Image 1 (cartoon, helix red, strand yellow):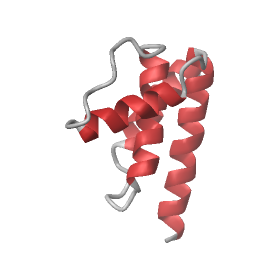
Image 2: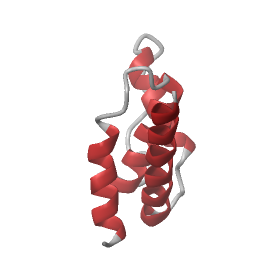
Image 3: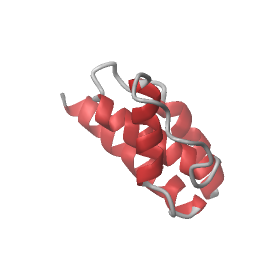
Length: 89
């Protein structure tokens, strides 16, 4: 299985993570997903009154510069880690 296929598989698995998954971890996944699928941030930062979109933008900006492959690999690793944490709790 290639990296792209594995990434897509784990993107589906991420949808089944428990609701108890922290917002911080969800934002990390969001940033890595956007970096892997879109690349570097290509929009301006949302305004102060749009906290949710702003947090998502910041999470994406935090991984700016990672290659598509590196972001995919980090995403897969993070989903695996969260699945293991969910299974052990």
